[in-house]
Length: 86
Image 1: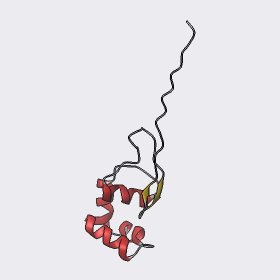
Image 2 (image 1 turned 30 degrees about the horizontal axis):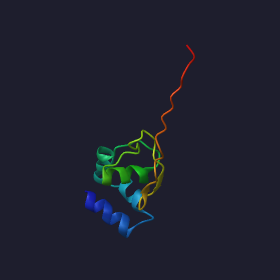
Image 3 (image 1 turned 60 degrees about the vertical axis):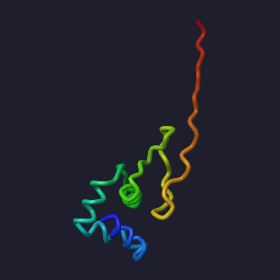
Image 4 (image 1 turned 60 degrees about the horizontal axis):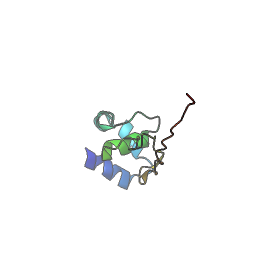
């Protein structure tokens, strides 16, 4: 399935999403293999293909660029220590 989806993306870059949604077999594979829930179907396809979550190691939500570029840098983890007066 993964190979078939990758071929669709390569051969039909503007229409792969619609083709996948119209194919019950491919659509089910995407839903079963995606690591995220998103309104952006291309992001779900990317997640299914590369088994990648949209949460980075720092606990931040990564921004999705495109099916060909994937996710952007997720940002730095900021540790804030608050000292309260006793």
